[in-house]
Every structure is written in C-alpha cells, then in structure tokens.
Length: 131
Image (tube, rainbow, N blue to C red; front, side, top):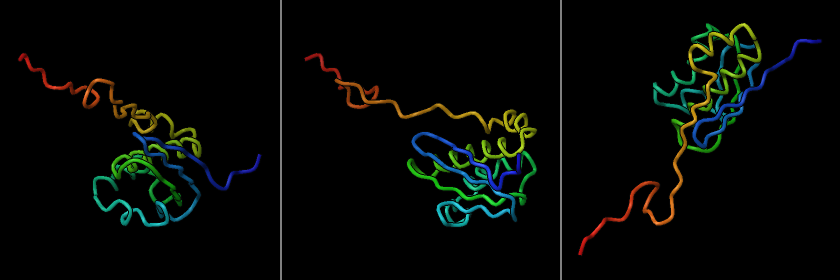
C-alpha cells in the first residue's frame, strides 16, 4: 500500500462542523482560506486549536487546511481542534493514546437544550400568580 498524501479528520462542537485536511508541510494552518491568527484573533481560541499539535509535538510538521461552518467562533475553534486531533490519529496511530489522554479525541456532547411547549425557554416557566 502506498503512503497517503493527506489525512482527513472531522471535528464537531455544538452546531459547528470542521473538515480538516492534514498534509506533510511547513506548519501553516489555513481556516476557511485565512491564516489561523486572522480567523481566530483571540489568543485563547488559537491556542485551543493548536492544542493537539502541541500535545503530540507535531507543530511545523503538517500543512493544515480547514473548512468550518455553523455555530459561533468558540464552537468552531473546538470543532477545528477535534478535527485536527482525529486527523493526527489517522496519520500516526501511535499518537492516539497521547491525544486520548489529553481529551482531544472525545467529542464534547453538550448541546443547546430544546424549548419545551408551555415554557418560555427550555426550562423557564411562566411566572406563577396566585390571584
């Protein structure tokens, strides 16, 4: 079997979905056609995205291209991080225990709770009046 040119990974968080493509290269991270720092200007979000690469010491080894849609900016950052981790695990199976221990491969199951009938929001009931 020949060596693959690139590896795919899908990441999800809340309603955001990220499709990540990992290829051997210089270490550029392109998100929706923009550099990482431009798409995620907050330092905390950029460091969240780079978390799996830092944990596996793979910074600068891969060219990463990401298409992300849905959700808000923090949710998208979480989805990109999850996608990068799954692509890294596909690229090198020996990295899987490191990524698993860091919690990068686990999908965060928290979602927005649906609105229930008779309530104003998911759990907020109309105010009770005795008279």
